[in-house]
Amino acid sequence: MNVSEGSFLHKVAMARLERNELIKAALFIGLAMHFYEATARAHRGLVQTEAPAIFDVTNFGAKGDGKAVLDEDGNPENNFALMRAWNEACKTPGPAKVVIPPGNFVVSQVLFAGPCKCPNPVVEVQGTLTASTDLSLYPSPEWIMFERVDGVTLTGSGTFHAHGEVNWKSNDCKTNPDCVDLPASIKFHRVNNSVMENIKSVNSMFFHVFVTVCHNVTIRNVTLEAPDDSPNTDGIHTSRSDQVTITDSIIATGDDCVSVGQGSRNISVSGVTCGPGHGLSVGSLGKDADEMPVRFVHIKNCTLKGTDNGARVKTRVGKIVNEASDIVFEDLIMDHVRNPIIIDQQYGSKKKQVSYQPLTYTYTLLQKEKLCFLQPSGMQKLNSLIDYFLYLTKESVKAAAGLVSQVKVSNVAFRNIRGTSTTNTIVNLICSSKIPCEGIEVADIDLKPMPLKGVAQTQSACTNAKVKFGGKHDGLTCDGIAATSATEDAIAA
Image (tube, rainbow, N blue to C red; front, side, top):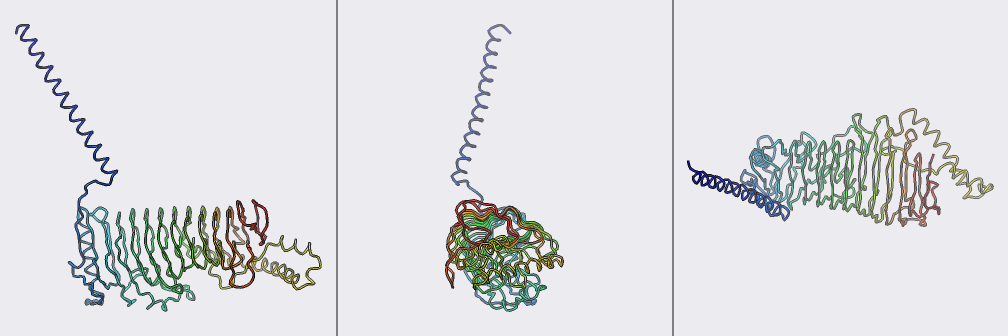
């Protein structure tokens, strides 16, 4: 091969190398452009996703005619149709949706069980699910249950109507400590990374929504309704769950609008309108031997209207040891609420709860007015002192018998709470004599008493609580009367 041939072949090789490099560059630029476009589309919410397979329950035999046609076991035939539709959706390898179309579907206990092959299954309720009122058809205390499912979404504009008014008379939990719970309307058990939205629940037999042993569950834009005298119809109750978010919902019921039960951690509640009902509560705690602590609860930007309680922590007397800590109630509006700010560690006690002013305050009054007890008002103050000594004696006896709360309450903040109260006692902190409350903060409180009887006068009551008052608080102190100090630490005996 001569020099000219070698030079030619070298040029050819170099040309091929340059072409290959250009092809690689073009491929790289193409992939980069594709990635950029996909990312941009994702940010705009325009990603093309596979349409879910639809499983309409009427195609599996469900009838939305409002009639309870029973199978040979006495259960509504719609039960089997709903669960068949779910099972088919659950085992589908791609996206799947169970649809309950417009109509009135009568069912008793229905279980939507996983785990599912389908990623992120959806149940869309467009019509009404009506509960059978025959309690013998509920072998366990839930009506509709999602269990061991990951990524499920319960959505739609439909309604769950439990007709609890038929069976509320069977609820004897106020008088029977061993009572059997009625069925909760919607229960999530061992469910993770899931959403409930836009659903309405009416007249639940027990809790409207029960979230237990769950992780990362969001409940938003739901409406939960029951009369104010309906027993144990908590709107949303959590237990042994973490990262539960409750937002932008309307709850009007006969018990707590939201109750954060034992074992709950990282619970966020915001944008809830509550009332009627018993308020937004942590607890009750101290009832069962296997209870777990409650920690990191944040309740904010909520409105309470005509409720029995506002922001509440409640624990029971007894020998059960537990704790509740790192709880914040803030940015709340109270509209004619009876007990706007309350820690009640005598919850469930048969004896009527009485708030006593601290001994130091009563003694100071008697010293300032040495002859005041000769007057009727003075006799009341003297009686208050005598009652307080009797109270201390009774507390010592109860502590020895295990009749005080064994639940430690600490690091609880009540901040920026404003509105009106139907009683004069704005702040009511009744803590355990054995384990006093610690780290209680009350700050920026603007609550006006509008009592149903008597003269409006802002008051507070504290027992066994270490409280720090700060910001604006209308002079509230643990002395029980209005004062003028802006910030103080108070220990109430």
